[in-house]
Picture 1 (cartoon, rainbow, N blue to C red):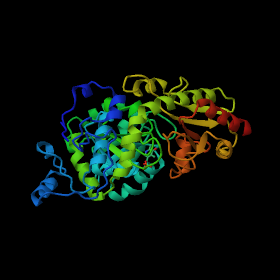
Picture 2 (tube, rainbow, N blue to C red):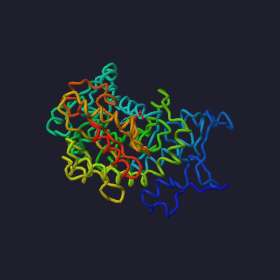
Picture 3 (cartoon, rainbow, N blue to C red):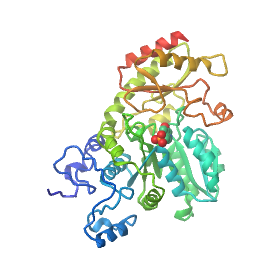
Picture 4 (tube, protein in one colour):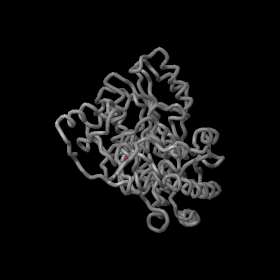
Length: 433
Ligand SMILES: *Cc1c(COP(=O)(O)O)cnc(C)c1O
């Protein structure tokens, strides 16, 4: 079996969909010239020919001295082939230098934050975040001596006022989970770049974007000036809801520190979970997303004209308050507008506790065939949930009320069913409430 590790000429001109399907034709992580499907490696430790080679492997680890020879595998928690191949393909999909995969999205986010910040540093973040990220920032970072400042990141002047000499990172999701607010990555990049003038590299403000909602098919934050991208692989990239995982796409300069962090804190993605994402999730992302979006468009248009619906937020329709920003920031790798698969809507409801919304979701849970009440998103099945009382339960009610997370707000992740069936199930539930 001979493999030439240099990429083929034809690979360099391939488009992103093709790359996400084929990966690196000649991965240095594993030679598998006779397989079409990358094999799942399942080995906690690896055979070493000599103590000298083992010593070389430890020397190479996190020191990027491997280029002169083949990778030396030692132990799964350091590096292993299946996860390594997924990491190469994720870095390529996001247009970044390197990727590292973690046991969950939260493991990736917490690793990035703790890798970047230390006691005395400050993090500025948007006031609405995925519930567990919010909980991480409120419950755990202060214990580590990291000050977390919540701000409305759509207000650049307000953000500007929060940047101090101790600020080391600006963290946000765009679109924001769950209300789909968009944050202008390029504008935040310009602001951070101005703040970074005269700062040493260790003192710079880094921009970290959680790109879980959009996926790299709809938005590549690094192209707009972000420094680091985080993902829950459990969602759109994993795509089938079979495995939990996370990833961070980072510049070369942050790769070794984060690799060391992952080795020592231990939150690695298991090779079996990596294999599912490598073989099913990422290669099918483009095709799934194109079809999620078609469905989401029809669903958004249906909801927008329905008399019982107060508001529907989907970046793909022109009633979306930040439609211009959506068109600027969210596009597929060929430049076509790509507003994604997620919707948020609120019913007309006289009761301040959002009772109608919950009744609507309960009706769907009991009666709908094409829509499932569940958290998570980006799967082939359409999922519906109530963020206020479920995924965002950890945010205090006053904070939610102040920032547009409505008690009866409904989040919908469009799947691959025929859109007419999704609309029919929504229509029936709207008639019932
Ligand atoms: C789900 C989610 C996470 C956390 O990912 P896990 O894989 O569940 O740990 C982080 N950010 C966003 C936007 C999410 O939707």
